[in-house]
Length: 178
Image (cartoon, rainbow, N blue to C red; front, side, top):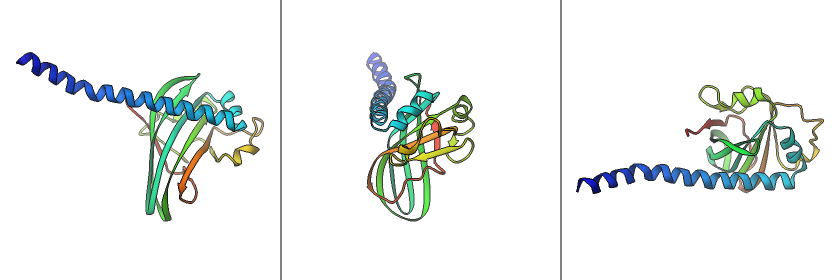
């Protein structure tokens, strides 16, 4: 009897860990696929990826609001083509807004100093610290490696839904525990 109890307890304890691993595996696949599509379709993304020290990809952010809004999503940091860490992003907003949308974005960290700010303190707040340029796919067409001289570039992609604009200002990015 106690043997079965021990097996049941171990199974209960290990199930969330296994599920988390499966979720991370699916997230990594989604992020890698989104990143590959982005660099295949947007020349500026391909150029940035060659010079970036790391790329943080959030394949799906969900944003919704009616006067008060919120957004959330999970992402993967790729460095040298390998998964380096997992992150989430969240933010709240208020003002004249109504609707819901989904989108993804990739953050290209162009130097080590910018990348180091990602893991400082209680998370990385977009708009505080290194200079960030946010581009949608249309704006990215005018970006070249000679005009790219900021710390971080965030490229928004795969927008769907009905909500005006995508702002990253005020989003908080936090590293997920291993």
